[in-house]
Structures are given as C-alpha cells and as structure tokens.
Amino acid sequence: ENVIGFESDEDLAVVGTNADDIWTWPVSRSAEQAHSGEHSLKVTVRQDGGVWPNVVIGNVAGGTIDMTNVEEVTMWVYFDSDSAQTNFKLKINNGENVNQMLKGITLAAREWTQISISKAEILAGAAQIDLTKVRICIAQCAGTYEDRSNFYVDDYAVVLAEEEPEEP
Image 1: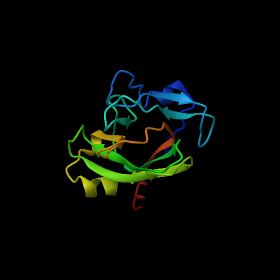
Image 2: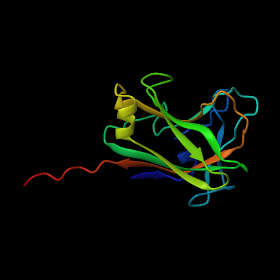
Image 3: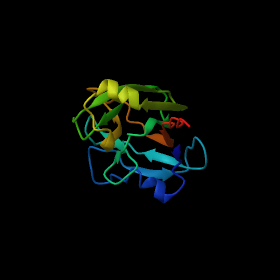
Image 4: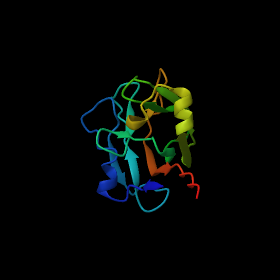
C-alpha cells in the first residue's frame, strides 16, 4: 500500500496545482484540516469556474495510474460546508470521456468521508478501459453547482493486489 498524506511538496506533485486551468480546481497543501498527520490537500473551489470542474488525482506525470496490479484506490475527503454534497463523483477514464465510468459519492458535512474504487468496479463500469493509464478525478457532475465550498483530500492510498503464493 502506498499512502500519500500531503505532508510534503513532493506529495503535492501527485496532483499538481492546476492554477491556470479554469476547468480544474486549484490545490495546495494545507494545515487547516488533516485526516492524519498535520496536512492535507486543500481544493479551493473556483467561484467563477465552470459548472463541471474537477481535480485529477494521479501518481505519475500526466495524472494517470497503472492499475494493473492494484486492488483499489482510497482517499479521505472533508467537505467544508454545513450541508452534505451529493453531486460529486469519482470520474475514472483514459482521458476526458474516453472509456469513462462514474461512481457517485456523498460527502458528509464537515467530517472525513472515506471514498474508494476497486479495479473490479472500474472494469465493471468501463470494460474497455486501459488499466495501464487510468485517470482518477473527483468531479462535480450535476447540472447545477450551488454549494461551492472548499474540500480537503488526505491519505490517498493505492492498495496493491496480493500476489498468489507460488506452488512449491
């Protein structure tokens, strides 16, 4: 299992800052909230950005992950609002709208919520996906976007599939 707790600038490189892209939310390391450790990834939601912005959570250059030997990807999310958010989804694809599947998530108001997606779920939702180049996004996928509260991501984990023991 590889866990990223956003405790260092190197951890931030997993996402990048997205500063100039109006369709993605800018991110930074923050000590305002943390699931574990002292920092998390703060996602500052643009008040002027489009209706369907997202943040790409990857672990290599280009924002993709090789899920060939991965069992699941998990993360903890804190939604900084008085109300729960029900319009967010994990958006899994090989690039925008390429071999794409969506998994609905509900983020509780002002508490940490664990979200995850397994390789089996991805294959069930997008059978043609190239597992060597999976892009994972947290996205707002509803037609309207009323509550533009910031949120935080922490303890992003890539859980490797256990290898079968070899026969003697």
